[in-house]
Amino acid sequence: MYTRRMKFSGIVLLAFFLAAPAAARSQAPKAAASKPASSIQMVLPSHGDMLLGIFYLAAGAGPHPTAVLLHGFPGYEQNLDIAQYLRARGWNVLAMHYRGSWGVKGDFSLEHAAQDSDVQVRFVLNPANARKYGIDTHRVFVIGHSMGGYMAAAATARNKGVAGVVLISAWSPSDDYKGLHAHSAAAAVAMEAKALAADDNILPLAGTTADALAREIYDHRSTFDMNNFAAAIAPRPVFFITANDGLAREDNAFAQALRKAGDTRVAERHWNTDHDYSGQRAALSRAIFDWARSVPPR
Image 1 (cartoon, rainbow, N blue to C red):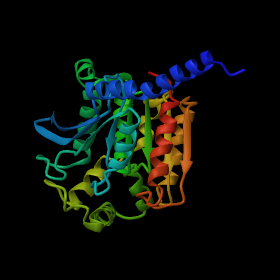
Image 2: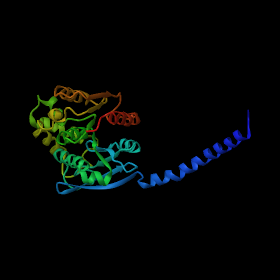
Image 3: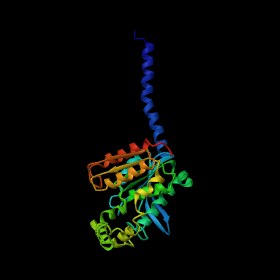
Image 4: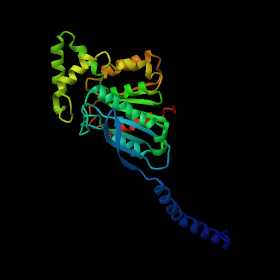
């Protein structure tokens, strides 16, 4: 039976529900304002020069999972959409340019790029920097595309604090010469230099030439082989992402090397797309996020 008491209760409930959104609105801006998402222009010292880039910082005090995002050769595609996607979901992402690339002072070389990648990973693992930027040092990941994939593997192998690594069409530089063994050294280097110089790849780089880079890879071809890192990376999680760009074979070989080294946490996914994952960018970001959040803290 409808009574005045029931009517009164209904009025009280209605007042409560009308007031609740206003109360929520009064608190939400205060929480967001405590530490909104931000982007910081970063300058990091590396072997006498200064790396330039950006640090995408997630909203909230943290600590936040944090990724170091390493671009490829020479870096026309920087994959910053992945950084934005992760930041929107509570991640910090550091994205820098290597020495001698895109206006950064110094000379570009693969050896220097490997050193610069190591500098970035050690920066986010440093306890003082972790406190300053809200970094969860137990959930630091390295994500590398193309040449950046090799750099990501190298940096992960050298830094045991890395929780996991994502290799997107990773390029193992020494693999280029495996198909040129029938040629003389001079002919092989010349062919590699021509490939490196294609598509204006050398224009954003300083202190080097296509010939110098081809010679560097040839002279250090036993070093510039991703398979060398298998023992040091295992048993940490590794996510291989491949495309129809000719790099899947060497990535699959590295995945097998990791499994042989005892790594039981190797995941692989292949997309029917090009080297830049054109048309698959949103799916690429989502796959990386879904995989990384399933990885337990280091």
